[in-house]
Figure 1 (cartoon, helix red, strand yellow):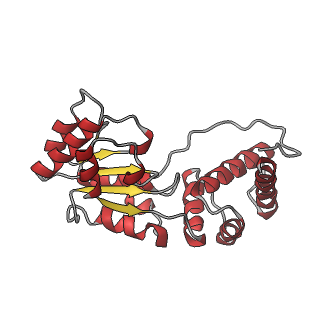
Figure 2: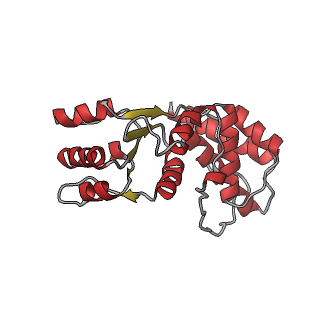
Length: 231
């Protein structure tokens, strides 16, 4: 993103602690089905559930909530791991499945272990299981039997909730009307919300300003200009 006039002071970088408890989760329409499935555990329609959605949509937050509530163990389905043994003894969580080089046979054994031992498996991904690079027929069959819950792109209400959480994670208080102003004018994606909040925080610190409508308008305009340049 292009630098702005007056952006001359380098702000100190402070760690941002993301809040991932159930109380920190703001629930709007695109998230409701996923929240119901997470809150409904262990009474799931199938022992294997896949949460699917774009980056920043809330999958990791929901997975963290479920892992704590279910006392689940995070696994990585690679050859030679103990993932299947873990799945026999505990609920297990496998995140970002479509972004990892998982071993198909190991994941097949994990799912079988879950089914045979009455435990649960929650997986998260950006794409539907049908789009994963799977060639093992038995694994394809097991994935078709899983319960898949899609999280859509955020609507304006959810964008507002996402923005509120992102500001809260940085311990920044922003007025509701300013949140609504941003949500109504930004790209409809959680990733865009994250980038906007990061840039607002950086500029406000650099200029020693409170986040206000003028600063927001400047940042939004900057992102629009960057989008046009990339077309």
